[in-house]
Length: 265
Ligand SMILES: Cc1cc2nc3c(=O)[nH]c(=O)nc-3n(C[C@H](O)[C@H](O)[C@H](O)COP(=O)(O)OP(=O)(O)OC[C@H]3O[C@@H](n4cnc5c(N)ncnc54)[C@H](O)[C@@H]3O)c2cc1C
Ligand code: FES
Image (cartoon, rainbow, N blue to C red; front, side, top):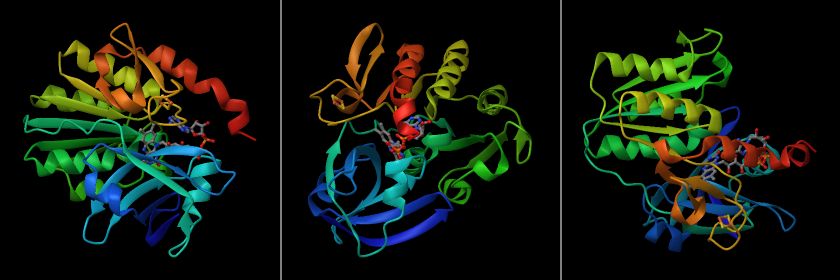
């Protein structure tokens, strides 16, 4: 059991939870994630460790309520306990000073993108964030992103906020005005697929953090498998970050739809 020591709402559907986990706090690096379970009957879901405080023995999670398990977690309060927290898992993000980094996020990817934006900015990069959503109400973490980047570009499909258009148009507007050394993208697979296709055209190295279905998160089952450069990789141990130009996003999308009906129950 891991106690929640503080809770803050970032928006109606996004909460920040500081959870007691001293051993994880001590060994985590940026990019690592945990697998959590809420309740004895709960399922295991992966969440990025947004930050850690070794003196308090805590890790911070930024959770977006999208389905049953994430809603259950977001409903917990300060003083409540998370049944299981396993980690740190995965490979740490490769953070270095490369120059200008464009971070493109949308939907489920915006919460896990936040610590990556923070880390690249702290490493001395010029960081431009492109946040995309269907409509104004679905744009989240804008203020947090502004606080740790050089610029935030908002794109909405319906033009209700920021610039009307897709995430790729936002990314391309930056590429056309200045030189971009690296692109990082997290969001729905279809979004990452089109960001990767765009940056390939301009030969800009691109990293995608893949949010596949996971079960154990330790490399034992292959539920999280993807094809990268023609080879099978397990996102939980080999990733979650991969060269976006090598990822088979069509296969990833097909696998993500596997439990659509059960998820809606
Ligand atoms: C390595 C890793 C790190 C992650 N870090 C974070 C994080 O820091 N914060 C955070 O809020 N979420 C994060 N996620 C996503 C999180 O694990 C899912 O949102 C969660 O598992 C959803 O479970 P659920 O039961 O609430 O929703 P479900 O009932 O499983 O899903 C509801 C709907 O949400 C959408 N959805 C759910 N999960 C995903 C997904 N992984 N990719 C695309 N669409 C999805 C689908 O449309 C689905 O139908 C991460 C995922 C991975 C693999
Ligand atoms: S989740 Fe089981 S191997 Fe990755």
